[in-house]
Image (cartoon, rainbow, N blue to C red; front, side):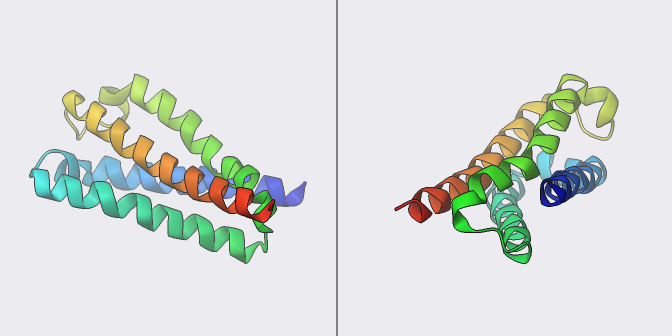
Length: 127
């Protein structure tokens, strides 16, 4: 139970930190050049996955539980992003409202990679 609470707390803190970073730096990523956007689009999910894998290993979570553990990390951010995207211009005032779609795509790619890796590890551990 304590481990689940810590994973949820980490997920919440990770989401808050990422959201604050993109609130400050988002225009440089989403509203400049296509190259800058696509480089970040590919690198951010990889870095995020590496951080999450590091947390799972630090907690010594067996591969058979990676999918559920990663969901605990992801859920606070997914819920937070649902609220953020529905009030994008108010919560991300430095970015243009038109950037919400790019930001959402960015989030989907990140969550898909992280959760996909965790599910793959869990399925392989079940063999």
